[in-house]
Image (cartoon, rainbow, N blue to C red; front, side):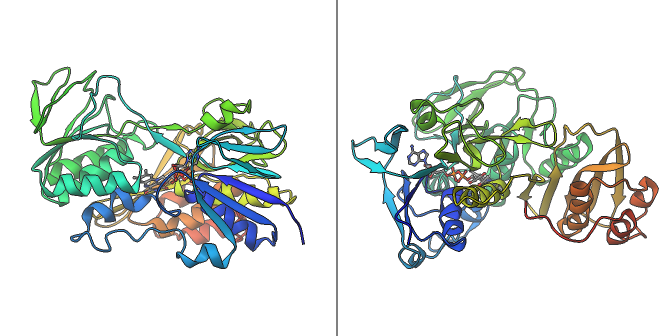
Length: 417
Ligand SMILES: Cc1cc2nc3c(=O)[nH]c(=O)nc-3n(C[C@H](O)[C@H](O)[C@H](O)COP(=O)(O)OP(=O)(O)OC[C@H]3O[C@@H](n4cnc5c(N)ncnc54)[C@H](O)[C@@H]3O)c2cc1C
């Protein structure tokens, strides 16, 4: 049996998933999973949705990655602590309390942290949403408030806005861009989403400019470019995240928009890998440096990294997929909006369902579906296999996507990533 020790830094989704994948792929050595949160690994998507919407504090969180007994049963040593740096020559991780942990191979799965804005003062009423502790704090604030300002109209801000609206709060979203989600959604879908929020009573202030934010004892006062000062019971700052690459930087490992890895999740140090929100990897044929912040990436890149740590040759080639839940809409996106799309096809559907597909030439490169995510499976294979399709057929909803997929010759096997 191998005596090797694999150290995973960061006990979040990617870290926990990697520990599981190491065992599932037959690793019999020691696995040490070090995390600086008080909790065992959990998934973050419920934090902006179910946790805020649940009527009772009891049992409002069900997002644990594993049952508690998984760690003992799988001989995964879960340790609380913060790693400061790696001594890559000695293969030692140095914790902030001075302890040293030896490793043979190390996975950095340190995720990201909420970006702050310069003009926002600190205070109990100005909160970010990244951790379970943040979400519980926000639950408390929601319960005793009537109004909230959301700074940032990205997915996180809008999910929070939808949840707070459902909980009966007056919600105002301040967004600097001239429209919602310019890098993630086509304009038509973003406009529908804005209308959806406004129909529920959420106020969306676009092109808000630099905000002046003042925290008082009992409220937060915010003034925008064209807005007079308004008072809110509290304020949520949701202006994106910053990758946690401090350990890599302190260890002389290459960084740049996160921790730089190759297709095999290897960093510039031969014994150190990285995965999840913290990792910047080469994407597509051109190897465009890309860092994804999504549940799918945390799961699948962690699995790829674990397999590569075990000596398997497992290139990570994802088809990016992301979902968001707001009110009764489930929106799913496949591919990247900046994939050189030169033509849009709409597959209209009844009620609150719709799908918009982006083509480059006759090849599908992107799709967004509202309340019909199940149909994206066929689209995924078309994207992955880059087979040309007939755009007229694609627009014809009497033709099933599975049929188009078969005619295009896309084989019905799902690729692992
Ligand atoms: C509120 C919220 C809602 C989301 N909703 C969706 C959604 O609907 N759909 C979707 O696809 N994605 C969603 N995401 C994104 C998704 O949850 C993340 O991409 C995913 O959690 C990334 O996992 P990770 O393991 O890379 O990072 P994390 O989950 O951030 O885990 C990293 C862990 O490492 C710890 N750590 C950092 N540095 C150190 C150190 N030096 N020493 C020890 N520990 C350290 C951190 O504290 C953290 O616990 C959401 C994210 C948030 C915050």
